[in-house]
Image (cartoon, rainbow, N blue to C red; front, side, top):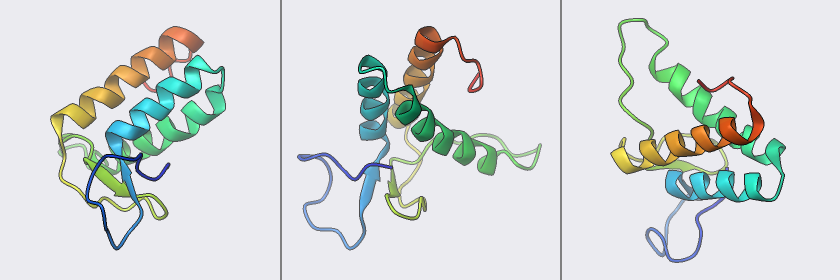
Length: 104
């Protein structure tokens, strides 16, 4: 994950924050630059986060966290609708540009 972009989140934190909205922007920027490997690695993180939430077939998906620790991937924020939608849009863009359906 990429650490937060300037202008977002608390100015001083005790951990390296990776905001989900920023990660969606990184995915889209990577796709625009033809760097599908960067987009795929970031989307793989969110696919893993999704699988972790729904591991038990009875568990429902509550959404992606607003932010994660950029080094450990630990969830450090609450699930958020806009963050989840941003990753969903990034997945749709990835599929449209690559034809790869691994995140469907």
